[in-house]
Image (cartoon, rainbow, N blue to C red; front, side, top):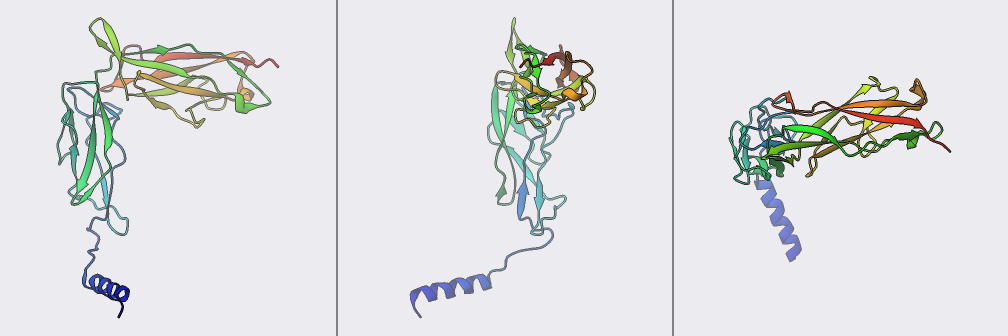
Length: 251
């Protein structure tokens, strides 16, 4: 028997003698893909978009890809700027803002990829950011009928000034028209999207896609409301009323 055949024979013997544990309660995969909210306020507890305290939640599956309920999943923060209850998944931030941590879930030898959680100052207010350019639409080429950014800035008061609040969710809804026949709110990729997360500058923005066939007059306007909440209550300035003038494009 040559060396290669001997190695293969030894490997086959090892596999035959090794039991691969399977069963409905044997964990083979771990899923931890999202946090309840992308940011936590310094000194507060992690909450969902409705302002309700929300624990971390991961899922585990067996070899048949069936979820295993009640599995002892544990959680941890990889930096000390937050405290994570490893069992309940409740996260409490320290006093330091404008920082971040990484959160992981684990069970046995399985550990998830880390998810970033920003620690931010308390958001106090929201206001329009920048100017809103008139959307000059085309009836023949509707692919061009997308506005520029309708943007707002989320801020926190510090002394006599303000600082931006990053990674905070802002929701955008149509006020006028109230339906999606004449206009829709979209993201940078042109797909329907009614929410955005603030940048490091505290800016969140969406665009409007216009459908001229539904307009009641050639010169009109689309009104979008931008809302921001903390602990379930709207911030000062919310909702921000964003008015987009629309008119036909002149050839």
